[in-house]
Image (cartoon, rainbow, N blue to C red; front, top):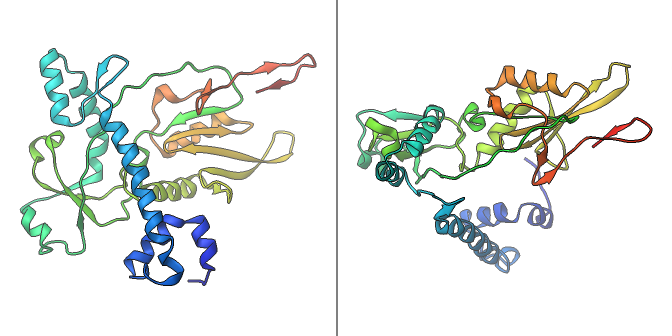
Length: 282
């Protein structure tokens, strides 16, 4: 525990500090009153706009996008296909490990705190989307996609939910979150901590999603290997980048189609060019 100037925390973590002030009944204090409510209102406005954009989107690439598992099943039934059902089954095969069924417990017992006091009920929903793939070219970088990355880490929160249709015979049962799940506040931190520990990389101070560790080139020169992580997408920067990704594959399950040299990163194209003097640059 340490004392920090309020102005520093307000600049670096305004939303978290505003939430702390409200939870501890400090929002009416002079140092907080003039900015806390404004900050939380702005947060809610941003979240609402992002969520409303998702819910307004009905089609993508000419394909109807369902907003729930029940709607997805109905779309398959109407079209006499199993595309959405297959996608749900594939996702649930990975997601299921994040939940633990509490047998013999009613929703009322959970909601009144008679069972597992301290746990909070939260809503959840599946996000359906249509994605495209890009080709992989010969680059100095090597990429991979860690399959169900967050589920590798334990859940740090005491939360539960009611199982929906996608859980099949467990529909309506009480589910405890036992693994980090996309959307939970602590999941990103849990995944980062696990990645850094297992791979022996250190997150940089400038960006916690950029990891470095010291390495030695074949000629003995010291340098830093880097991992650029965006949720579960990883770019390895190393003299032996392909070998580094192979090591990641020993620790985590990778999507086979994602392993290779990328041609795009965050919407920008990447290509290898050889100059007149023989140097190869990106």
